[in-house]
Length: 182
Ligand code: FNR
Image (cartoon, rainbow, N blue to C red; front, side):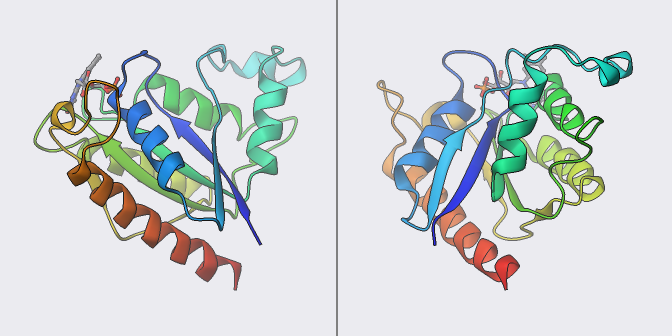
């Protein structure tokens, strides 16, 4: 049975390497996984005062997260952590009225950066938060798309080398989703 996987992209910029990586994952996904990007760019900054009367975009976002069977987080690194947009989205879907809607689903993190470290710091900060959210986060394979500026062609398509990394990640995640369903 096909699992619906929400893909969260931590970058809001048009030419984002992480969005290109997410689109590559969507193109390479096996039949058992239906990947779809859930947008986070229009979510107002979380404020606890909103809990009783949330801004309009919160509710459809929370519904999409709740409806998904699992999550793939594609994150850039901003100052050795995940971007604020990513953290904001994580926080929004943990709070009342719906509560933590991420809980109990299989997730995985992949990061991309032009640096040699490939967003290692962002990936692990994000993993730390996923522990608290009770997202069942895939330990291996760890994929850090380093020198991401060399991993996509002029049309934004992943190079053959990049496709290899994305495929390895998807193979692992497909197995992980199966394992978590048992
Ligand atoms: C960055 N960048 C960056 N890169 C990195 O490897 N480690 C870091 O700590 C940071 N810090 C950082 C802070 C801020 C505010 C910005 C805007 C950028 C560079 C970053 O990796 C680069 O801009 C990527 O291209 C961002 O990912 P997208 O937008 O291409 O997906």
